[in-house]
Length: 198
Image (cartoon, rainbow, N blue to C red):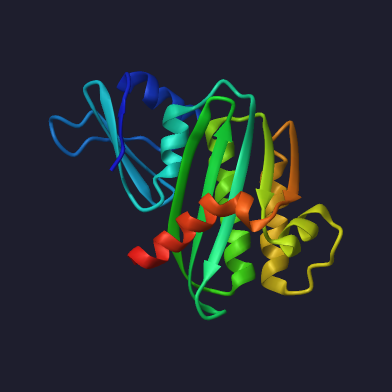
């Protein structure tokens, strides 16, 4: 459960600017609360506590950045194809790891999990406020489909591809490249850890 030390009034303004619906707190100690992406943020004096599943997107809005470029690594895992599945992602900029995470996504094929991992990585990069995103993944199929080099015949994968392309319009510049599995090992580890912990 992340605790973000911050001015709760400034944090509230940032979330309101992002279009989130801010609610009154449930107790005398809570200043306000908001739900976003499956997580809840609760503000107290001098801090905001984020809880629930998939906290990265809400954390990103609260922490923010001054723009710039980020490298986003993604990987999906599925045990059974289809079977229990998860996603992993890592965002890195010149200062080091910005954030990373892994979470289960229910039942999916390997390719569906890869797309969902990519979507999660791009959503988090967007929510952090980065201007440019350089995406890296070890799924050649996903990379080439997103770049338009290969057709997307499966209807569900086509929907995921469209969603990725929509998200990428929020950036001034983006690129996606296929990398060897060993370069993507941290995202892979996070995806598999999420399955192991489930």
